[in-house]
Image (tube, rainbow, N blue to C red; front, side, top):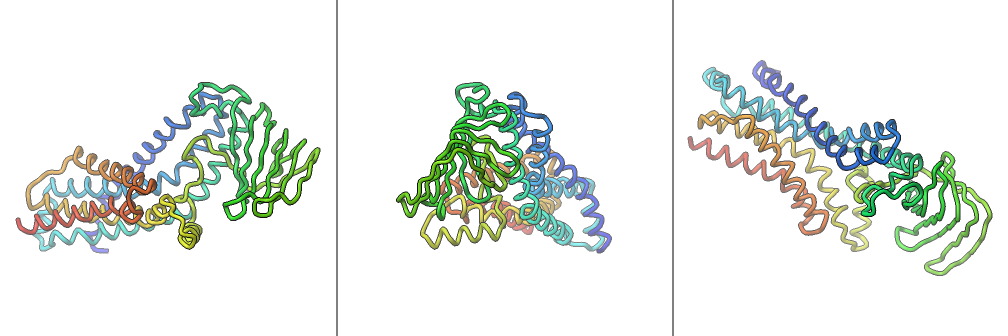
Amino acid sequence: MKRFDRYVLEEILPYLLSGLAVVILLLLLAALQSVIAPLLAKGAAPLLVLRLVALQVPEAVSRGLPIALLFAAMLGLSRLSSDAELKAAQSGGLSGTRLFWPVLGLSLGVALLSFTVAETLVPRAKVQALQVQRDIVLDNPRVLGLGSTGGDSGPGNGGVVLKDALGRAISVAQVQPGGQLTGLRIVTLRDGQSAREVITARRGQLRGSVLVLQDGLRITYQDTRPVTVVRFQSGTLPVQDLQASLGAGDELLPIYQPLPTLIANVRALKARSIVSPRDFTALQRKFAEPLAAVSMAFFAVALSIYSLRSGLNVGLVWVLMLTFAYYATWSVFRVLGETGALSAVLAAWTPTLIYLLAGLALLGVAARR
């Protein structure tokens, strides 16, 4: 690595680390306001809540890396430009476009790291977070009042739907103190469509990875016709990775699935001519969001070259505004894609393309100066 490249990277990397720390903190504060604080107010165990907070960090890192790079590259290159260090480099025979190589090289590393975290740590963290939420619900049923319009539901007055790795939905009418469950209904679906088995039980309790049921009924189906009906006084049902959601949008979304699983799901949906904007958009986001780091790095260098030739000084306020602009456009287009208002490709890639096109426009204007 040449001395100039090292010098540029040494200027950007401290801002990248500090920017990433700030982005992670902001994302965790958003979670604190929407979920964590209400959980604590409802009396959830602090250690379980702390685990839930820690499990949000991998997603914050993956999502925050491209944003932090945009902030770091603009701020670092702006300082080099304002201190006339870039002009000195030009006087020494280096062209302005020489900035592209170290910054774009760093952006490729950031994109790869963001993609790796999203594919390895984030899916596991999300599954574990849903399991922690299950523990929170069973430890203190008062948290089931979260998001309800009727205020505090009190112990045992709320319902919850648990899900396990075998695709079974376990509906619980009431969760009593001590983890006693009442009014259970367990549905196993066939290919995600019709019910293959329905188990109802008056009472139950989770003991490790086994659900103990009492006073229940088991019905199996062929197509939509009941095949067997069995009553039982007590029985056990093994469960795997039992999870609970504390609110709408809290379930394991397609974007949190590993890429091979998501690709297989999308292919299956297309083969059956099922339109699922959330799944289609998630598949595009898997690639668009990490590669946004490259687009942002290109924009930051283009802005630096434009500033150098026009004499424009990009201060901290502009850096923060341009950084926030990506998050705002990403949020809007994500919603448009997941609701089907915009095609998945446009919804996922437009925020990235905006910065790429803006960078090309700045280079075009700078070339005429």
